Length: 202
Image 1: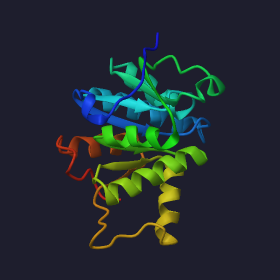
Image 2: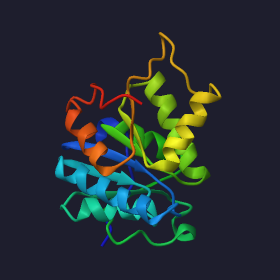
Image 3: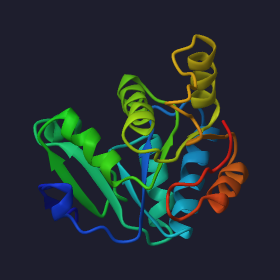
């Protein structure tokens, strides 16, 4: 059963261990991407991460399934006003946070993140990913890993069209890619637990 609580200021919330934030859509592009999300969730749990995710189905559910299979804490982060409309959480969410608006929800994800993993999705996932990229270039260089074919195509487009580019004041060393579960495991193994080291080049 999901435990409901309202999030207070970051200083009021105790943080235990490492937290990975997972962004992914409700309609997986393929069975392979869904399997990759599950493998990523499992790998994160094995490395000692708890998981923050949207709480619903698709790639989010697959990542949550993988994390919960290893006993990780899996938290759903939703909006107070939208939870009834969006429906029940997936069965792998063990606790939940209900927040008043999109900005607060995004800040909750990113302020708690030791690592962000993003896969393919719809406009909501795109919004989450671009917020994470802006946060990592402007606020704190939290490591971000884009995984799977859909996310890698998006990254290639953003680079080609110069939506995303490196400057001396906005380095992109926090950003990495993983086209497979094996590559993701290698990236994660190389990550300094301080959350400040690179997990590979993008």
